[in-house]
Structure formats: C-alpha cells, structure tokens
Image (cartoon, rainbow over all chains, first blue to last red; front, top):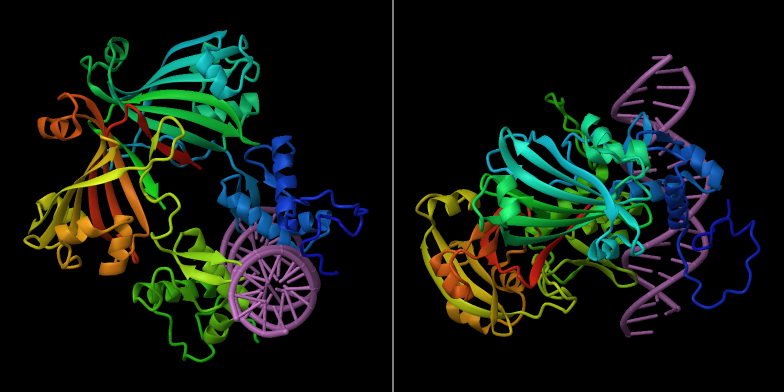
Length: 259
Length: 259
DNA sequence: GAGTGGTCTAGACCACCAC
DNA sequence: TGGTGGTCTAGACCACTCA
C-alpha cells in the first residue's frame, strides 16, 4: 500500500478539494479513533461487548493493523476500551469494576476494603434549579431527577449524596427501580438508560455540617465534612450527572494520585 | 536482524543460563525503559537536558527504533520525559511548568490564575518524628528537615504547609537558601539536591482548625479546613518528601479529574 | 489449531526545527 | 540542508484463550 501518512482517511478514494485554510490536519489513527468513538456513542457496540478484531477493523478502514492498534491504544488509555489478550477488545463497562465504585475515591484509613451499604432517601422529578441546569447544560424549566442517598459502613453513615440527572435522558428512573437494583449505579445507567460515564471532574472543599446534613450523618452541627462536587461526562464530553457529596472523613480519606 | 521478540535484551550476546523458575518475562521495550530509568536515576542526563536521539539509542541497544520509541512513549506518558518534535526528547523538569505548581491542585473558584506569594515561617533540622520517619522510610533517630510556610493570595493566607525532608539528602538546605530561591521549590530540589519528584500520593480530609493553625490562617478556631497529606516519590518509587497542608477552601477548591 | 492481542523489525515518508 | 520526533506500512513471530 502506498504511504499515506498525514493524509485524511481514504484520501485515495475521496476527491481532495481546495483546503479552506486551517486544514485541521489529523493523523490517520486519530481519524479512526474518532470514528470508533462515534460508533460507541451511537451504541454500535454496547458496554461489555467485544468490538471487531484489529485485523478486521484494519480491513474495514483499509489501513494497516498498526494504525488501528494505535487508535485503540489511545482509547484503552482513556478507559473507553479494555484489551484482553487472546480474547479481543471490549467496550469498557462499570459492571465488573473490581473496585465496585470506579469514581469513588473514599478509602478507609486502615486497609480494609470499602464495602458500603446504600440507603435511598429520596428520588423525585422537579424543575432543575438554576445552578444545576447550568452545569448540566439544561434549558431553564427543563425537568431533572434528584436522588438523595446515604452510604453507610455498618450502621455509620459515611457519605450523603445528592445526585442530579437530566429528566429527559432518565425518563423511567423511579424509586422502585433504584431500590431493586443491585450493583453500581453507573451500571444501571448503562443498562437501562444507555448512558455511560467515561470521566468526571471533581471540586473538593472543606465545609461545616449544617443542621440537615448533621442530622442525616449523625454528627454535631458544624462538624467538618468533605464537600465533593462531581460532574460526570459521557461520550463527546457531554455532562450528564451532577453529584454533590458530603464525606465523613474521620475514619476515611479521599485518596489521589498525582502524576 | 533476527526476530527476538520476547527474549531478554541482548539475548544473542549473553549466555542464557537455566531459568530459575518464574523467568519474569518482560518485553524488550520494558527492559530498555528500565535501563533508561536507571540512567535518569543515576543522573546520566539531568532535568531539562536532551537525551540521545531515538536512532542513537536504538543503535546503542541494538534494537529497532520502534522498540526504543515504545519505551520512550511510556516514559513520556509518566511525565519522566518530554518529547519535542524536531528538537529531541528531554528529561522532565519542574522548572518550566506553565502552572508553576505541578502538584498543587488548589484553584480559585473564579477562573483567575493562582498567583500565590510564599512566606517562610520556619526551617529547622531535628530528629524525625516516628510517623514521619515511617512514611519516609527513615531509620528512627535519623535527622529530618522541617519547613513550615504559608501561601498567600494577596494578604489572605490560603495554605499552611508543613514539609518534611530526609536530612541526609537535603544537607545544605537552610532558611537563607529557601528565602533566596525564586521559582518552584521542586525546581530547587532538582538543581541543588538532585532530587526529582516524579509522582505523589495524597490523602485528603476535612478537619477543624486548631488554635495554632487558626492563628496562622487568620481564621476562627474550628473553621473547616482541607487537610492534604502528600507523599512525593522520586525515581524508583522512593518517598522523599512528606507534606502536610491545610487549605482554606472558601474561595478556592481542590480540583480533580477522574478517568 | 485457529483467532486474538502483543512484540519486534525494517524501511518509507512527513512535520518540525535549527543552522 | 540535515537531524529530530511522528506516522504509516508490511510482515514476522510470540503469548494467550478457547473450542
């Protein structure tokens, strides 16, 4: 095959018109990556499923296996795909996370594994408050689902979460559905609402417990709490969940790795 | 050249004795990576300097350029090296961080760039306290340097840091040297003590300000503060700094990206 | 044994930089 | 103009999985 480094995908098939200025050059493997991401976004392959093999994709896109490989490499590095030698490449899922909670960075101070119980407090639909609407990119007056829940270690409440979701995308979400669900909440979102969280941004503060929070977390008013505001994104950098958590950090801590 | 995939480096030169059980197979590019890391660790190339080109390294190790490339790719992903097209590959440094503080995740709530002033409060040598010694892997009774400082935004104290360093590695560190230094502290460590921080682990909690901290941060006793314990590592996963910070988070927050 | 991802090579050309 | 990293190809063989 001729060397077509730097040419747009299938440049030898497509007519190449005048470049309008700022050709936005991108290497073949990135173009392929972006096609693959679009396929994921469109639901061509669902979380947990195998995608076609590297050789097949190479044939389909008419490039060498190495080029497909580099596209998949990047997607694996971003946790969009998971490679398994001898078996294939799979769409990442929140189902089999060994950690159970991929995005929850709260860890017991002793080494013991987390093991938290969930206690659903509330689940209701309402007009999205202004700040929530802004962060989720909703129209004002658009509906939202609010979920409030506790995470407990034994009998001790450790986390109080307020979760906000766009009402349109999460039409069938009810208290019953949430109560009945066993497994990570993000797995429920994947399975029932075709929403797959791929990354999140968190803003962390120290705050003093207010009356309501203190009551729910069984703490004195004014006790220091970790406030964690998480905005989660799905394919295409679209924010789809706002989560405001209050973490009790006397026997737990938020761990982070700086690289 | 023959295909030597999966064989230890220079297997065609070295006699290959009986494998003792658990041959600990590692691909060529990883062996090369580990040799390169050893070179960095040994100070063969200093932070900011160019390392030899890919072709030269390939010739030196008698492998193909692609194999060297893959080793360097991984090291670049870990922020050990920085590639610059057309110029070469450079040893990463804390000197030119656009962000000034590569490991400081505290950000103003409005978008404004951080711009913090430093105020050195203390710098003394002493026997390392037991917990510090344990975390830094020091012998009991070994000496340590303690640095205490404030970071201020204008006149408002925002961060109170207590920094612990192994006394042996930081022999010449004095108040005067710290006072005189302009630029990131980690750059000083690189330049004067040949200690390059490559990664860090943080444990974050919410705490109530004690009397001393409250005084230094100009806050009421009991005010909620973010407690950030950072353990920083140099080449070979050797911990070389313990930093206990208290962050004031009324106008700032700790930002984090989950992937 | 067939199929998958993983490693390695050799060689081509492109994009960028400095002299 | 020559050197550096960046992209792409083609083809070989290895390691792993499963029928």
